[in-house]
Length: 365
Image 1 (cartoon, helix red, strand yellow):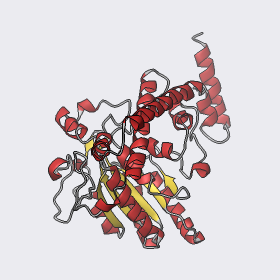
Image 2 (cartoon, rainbow, N blue to C red; image 1 turned 90 degrees about the vertical axis):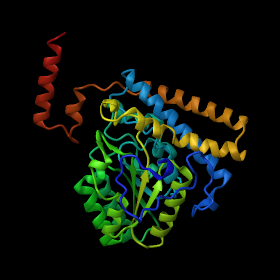
Image 3 (cartoon, rainbow, N blue to C red; image 1 turned 90 degrees about the horizontal axis):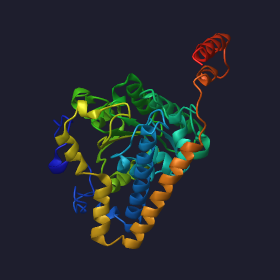
């Protein structure tokens, strides 16, 4: 996004206003509407969580490559969008994630073992949504947007002081469920925020081939208040989300935030992004790494020192080791259990299929 250029997005509207607090080199932009919100404590806290999230994500990726996880969808490059947004919520606010919000889950206190269990095939969920105020992952695109809208309508009916936040990607925005959710949220004035991480690619389909109008403008067309933020600028994301949360909590209806970011890895560990995107694009976005950007600010301002860096490195190493231990402690799933766990109670037909599968497997012994 250097110099105002956004890779992969057809930018044709004169009304677009990309909110930033930091320039690509980590310097505060004095004309930013949120320049005054830059505080050392907040910047350090956001940076700490982003470093920890990347450490967990990288170790999970390694574990998948070692055969310990069946699949992993990396959030590398999207840490600022996730930590910047979740940190603007109250712990009582409920979150509906998609499937890549590992940084959000970590921030909410979900343990590495809980985050990894479904990717190892041990469970359909992984954690108690009520405990963490965060729903389990939804791998079917955009289903969580309807869940969030319905939940928010319930919050509204109860008169509770609660805001609901739903994460989705640019690919999910093309689904009918997402558009229905936006419409229902607007019509009912439900207290929900849709946070779209526009990471430029819906698997191998670029943003320019998905839509001709920027997503936040589509949301505004449904009647939601909308914002457009640099998703690699953690301070800008935090400020924009905090502003949206305050507006929604005050009863001003739903909101939509489009955070422009980039998926540095493949769509999943089963994807090879080199087949559909070129190295030049990747290098452009690597230069906008959200961790390096915030670290540059912290260093320039003298808000971190070697003691802080050393303590954070040690904490990240401990989290990496805990992620590895937690994964290895998870049970090895048995394929036969798929028949038992497809439904709440195994039906007669599933039982027959499991018996046939077991007999087939044992025939090779």
